[in-house]
Length: 592
Image (cartoon, rainbow, N blue to C red; front, side, top):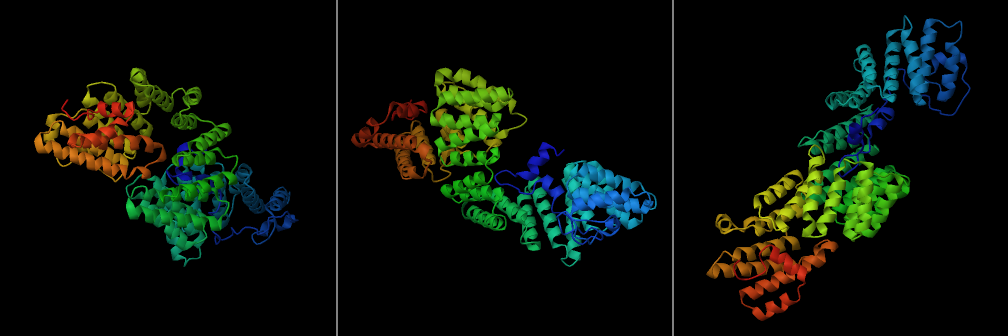
């Protein structure tokens, strides 16, 4: 069987989908058209094939079932010679292989190989077809053995080399597979383009191998292979799908105009794929990912919904839609879609994701039920501990000790696996040290820095790193700090400006005279800039950001000397906002 690792590697690559699954690679689309004696009957309808025709069927337009039946009669004819018997069983094997009856195919071909006196070219063809049957049976070592023997008899056979590459993929040797596919491309080029279709398929395989290699330049190499595949065969759907997936992943590693161009490139690739294969589900989900990158979540969700229409019984497609809805902030719809996916095929992870949405909706009881169900499915699943810890954490500081136990267990269970989940557990452990009245700044900073090293993407981790330093800032830290300190605005978001303003207020506690006034003025400018950016923040974050920025602006005005205006702004703040600023020692103008 295909190992789970390889099934994942060749069927789905990170944010995009590589449409060429390993099973499809080995069972379809990779037979060259020009190999001697391997042309296929062009008619698939059942026909009448006489026993005597079994020995000259290469150019006959008969159905595979009819061929198998006629050749079975020929093989059992008492007057058949050993040569006749070998030829008949070769054709039985070919026909059974086309009918995907791989065990019967392999059995017939083994009988053909056992016959004495089989001439070289027939033996090569029998070995090649045996290799295909063994691939169909997922017996990769046996496939490699017979295909290597076939290459001894025909060293430059493109079809055999292609099959050998697929067999090497099956045993987890992408290095050997890449060597085989590169040889296929070279042979096709030397053949003057007569084998363009097979060369295109080989290039798509090389693209998938490049993506899965983990090498720094893997995505760039993959993009080049998919582009080469399209040049060989502009109608190769997998080349467009793979190119789109590589572009989406590259865009996720870039910023600004470069990322925008890559997302546009990906969208163009998926449009081509949809023209060639309107029912290709992976094209729909890939287009959704590209449109999210282009800042068009509404259009993106439409494509994910179309994928569900095309595959209504597919739990993974409903999960794609649920995740897209969650990403767009449409949480109630996301919860319903997660429930639908879980009814089709529940897993501990999907139940954990469902609970995350339910926590965001404030549906704590439903979230707890989802997490308990996840633990029942997999008692060692770290996400259940992480989710239960988040529920306890949100209940307030009195529950932090119990939450800490859950987060420690989640972190322990993920040490050899899920970096993203482990990073989130560490992030919450840092928050407990920061917000729970603890004094261990070293531990709080250590937790969040490790979280960032494991998963540098989430902005809340960098925000926590800043908040830790604000909370535990000392006079010596201020003396050692250069520039704007640890909370330099890294982007133009409302959240970044809030952190910058809070840091300036905190530094003011350690300053004197004009330096202190400059800190307050800088804090005011930061909070004011943040208020201009609130509408660009995710909808769910806007209320808290708006209130905190308004309080910070009022506090800075009060401190700098505009007491009446500042007092009016401060008086409108809620108790929660006051407590938040006080937690980080930035709620008063005088020193602490």
